[in-house]
Length: 136
Image 1: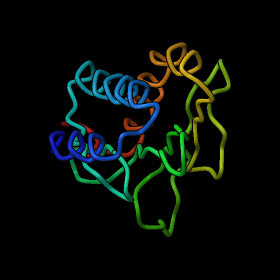
Image 2: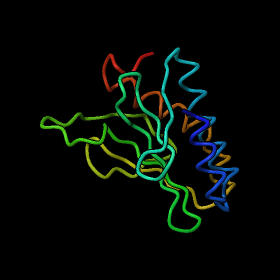
Image 3: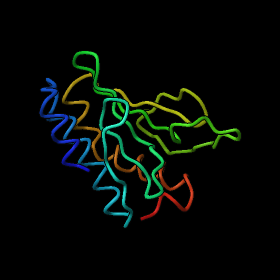
C-alpha cells in the first residue's frame, strides 16, 4: 500500500514533501521498533496509518497549500464509549481536540526535523492504547 501513497504524493507535488516523507518514516520506524504492522494508505486525501486491525489512527493533513499536520485519532467512526488517550508530551507538541483526538502542526522544516523522534514515540504510545488490534 505504501506504493499507492508514494504515487499519490508524487502526483500532489507538495512543497513540503521532504518533511512529509520524514514524518512517514518516523511513524513507520516506530511501528518497526515495536514489532507492529501499521499499514499505510491514502485516506481522506492524505497518507494515513492504521492498526493491524485496519483502524486508522494517524492521518496527515497536507491541504490546503503548504500545511503539514498530523491528526491522531481512534478511527473513522465515532465511538459510543470514547477512549481516553494519554500520552507523555514534554515538548507540548499535541493540541488536544478531545479525549481521543489530537493534532501536531509543523510550521516549518526545522520544527519537523526537531520533532521526528517525538512523533514516532507519540505514534507508538497512541497505537498501544487502541487495543490488541494495534499490534502486528
